[in-house]
Length: 276
Image (cartoon, rainbow, N blue to C red; front, side):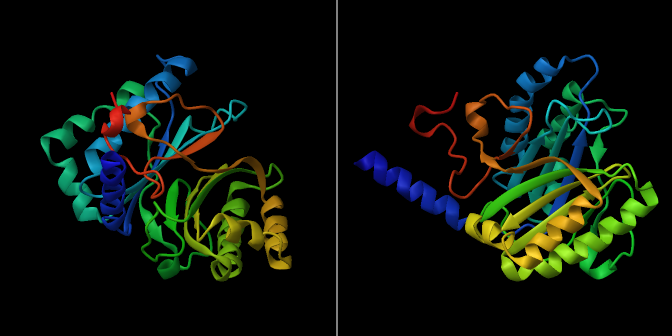
């Protein structure tokens, strides 16, 4: 009974510490060519744990990892990640510490340094109102700080229709983002971060709830959003994020997405003998 009460108090405490994210790192990583795909997937959970351990007590709101499906085209990275942080100053302060500097070298054990990087800068879509998007830039399309550990997160990877040029695609993708916001914010979308690439889009979407997501796409306006999307994108992946406790280092799977700090399944260290 005492253990149950202790755990309940711990979960309540962690929940009350939740903060809104105002700064993001939208990572696109191609695996180190020295690694097999099997080795990459085996080592990735350790890197995920290192990321959470570095940021979670100071700045981390959530860390969402996407592993594209096995049948992805070669131009699609082997991993995407959205690191949602309290603010840029907190992020930079952590990276300037000794631990942060050591962490800065760790990605290159897993990823190809030649073509792996964050999609910077993160552009405020609401302020800029771009008529077209920029290759390999990321966009906070709503611009309202939210707690990405709460609600219901889904991720999407779509590939540019072969009938469209890159210029046409990025222009239409901007218009689609406007349509999506106009339609879905009143129906429960709280956050919407996207990466624009000449050949694809990656979207991270936070909904008020799973039910609001399902209900929105049943409406006439929701169906229209889907129809517009299919005119510019071929679906590669559309998944809800699964809770993932990095201290357990469970295997990760191609074609899945993981939320490492969902409010309903917080990181609780070695409590109860679940850690290493």
